[in-house]
Image (tube, helix red, strand yellow):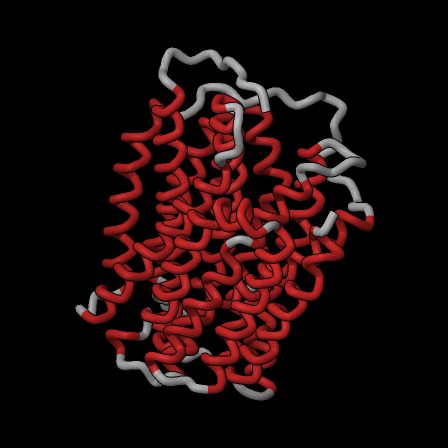
Length: 385
């Protein structure tokens, strides 16, 4: 990957720090909300099935914003959309904390999903710009910082619960911190985006190789989405954790997910992509099986740590393989694969709620464990070439 020169007088490491901060702020917004889902469920007296329906509001906002976010980045540049997206993301947090009815919460979550996608598309475009400045792959490290932010947000959420701080106060404080972060990092973002050919399509149907990679991402992101939205509920209702420990599962998951992303490149270079993916799938299955079979505080936390380690490297490796597609440009291939994979992230949480409503939450998590086996089985046919 050759280095490029963008119109900037700042050293490239300054841009890297600013974009890293953007990923950090985005991750803090998401994990702050995720850490208090059990609290909101209890406040609104929602069953598992009802909570699954409420959580569908987030993907509704995400899907609605797909064309808008892409157009905004193309029209105004990712630098401006990052600022607007992260500010809106943070501004919605207090509205979620103040929601007193299911309708109010769902309306807020639609807006939350819209802001999330604006921030996600623009911050990844910024990441691609910094990667181009360096002339080598560094995008995975940005996603590691996002995961680290998830661990920080989950840990803060656990403290807020133990201190009996209500969600509105918690969310308002985090929003203020994110606002300050945006003000500090804004001047140092990459000023211009790498050019894209005018006739390059925004989306194409994947061929067989890319479809297999997409299914691989789908299986892993199904498990990942489940952990984001349901780990706290699982610890509250199945593990029967005390209020101060309800967020422990999410924190355990996010800590190992962040760790895994920072070491994934080294491990893959040493043992190969296929073995890394196979181990990732087996870790995911083992972790969920442990949490379902022995739902105590210690064993469930250990299980969720294994799941975090398992899902950490799958998406970066899938995107890396897609970027080497021999049938279409890297950007188009990545868009096609990420669209298939993203469907798993959206479907996981509502699916858990539906199955839990028909049977139990433990049965739901047991079914998700099968996704890890699918990752291990598909590793060689999907990524072996």
